[in-house]
Image (cartoon, rainbow, N blue to C red):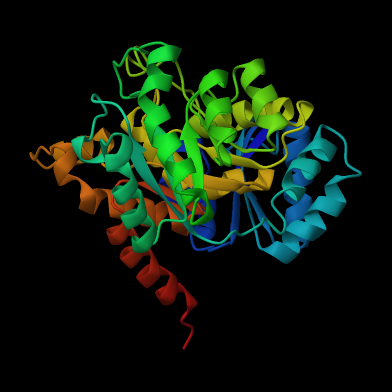
Amino acid sequence: MKIYKLNPNIDLKRLMQKMGVDKAGIEIMKQKHSLFIFYIKNITCGAANILKQDALSIGAELAVPIGVPNCKNKIFDALLFCNEKQLRILVKKELSQPFGLKDLAKKLKEFINMPSFPLKIMGVINANDDSFFEGSRFKGVEAVSVIEKMIEEGADIIDIGGVSSRPGSVYPGVEEELNRVKPIIDEIYKNRLYEKAVFSIDTFKAKVLEYALDRGFKIANDITGLESDEYAKVAAKFNASVVIMHKKGTPKDMQKNPFYENVILEVDEFFEERIEKANSFGIKDIILDVGIGFGKRLEDNLALIKHMEHFLHFGYELLIGASRKSMIDMIMKKYNRSTTPAERLPGTLAIHQEAVRNGASIVRCHDVAEHFQALKVFEEIGKFDV
């Protein structure tokens, strides 16, 4: 039995129709606007009958397919609707129930009092000539003025990378990567820019990571999600924060027909495994990145953005990085329009604002000033009550 939290702003009627809920039940439950909506996958008939009765007894609801009360189907999917008070009561009730409901209660408990984090903007600097967005490419001394400008514009974090991870790209080798980022890292260190902002190194190689961390960098941004043990050792040695990103495949092949039965659950399982690995090496400060565009179809990217709040149950900050990515072009092509990376700032702002609404607190972007303005306006609207 697996669960994930859905964004309450979804088409419940369509979802319940797809699940096979009876028409009368759909008409009643589609009116319910619950703060918590959980999709429960592969629940047994016995567990569903108990959970439904317990939910109804406290004013919550469990939507199940037709035939469940008579156990027509042994395993199926269900939707749990509740508010925070009901969730707390239900967790206590199910801890003493059979059929796997005790484990379900433990999972549900993780969604009570999920954390919130202050919003941060992460500016992007690329030290390579083949990054997909030309406007992010800078070298050596040239990068210093750009970094200082980003800090003035509102960047809390600056992310430096030396290799492209765009679909189809090929890794040039660790020595070439280090040669690209070394001049920028040295300038940052010489000018003590690490005192003005937090610096992140976008690399999956331990050698490059150690060079950066030894010169004032604080964040290890790893697109392989802590695949390398040596990398984990270096990050732990410097007590660095680690960005664990999910991807399927390698940049060379990741967009060749990626497929997920359920992208939310697959990414969730990946995070669970890699968080455990990070902790085993002594890494405690973790940031999670769902990896928009890294081995994902358009529908996978949209699902991860829509239901991003689910991943807060781990208790860590969530990073969103969809700046000028091709998913924007995929959407626009539905309207017979095509876009280049240079034309995708409006779509980027829309995606990032929605991701922040859904739990992201670190926004990785190419356009710091524009993001600062958009997100501050968004925050002020959110603070306003009456």
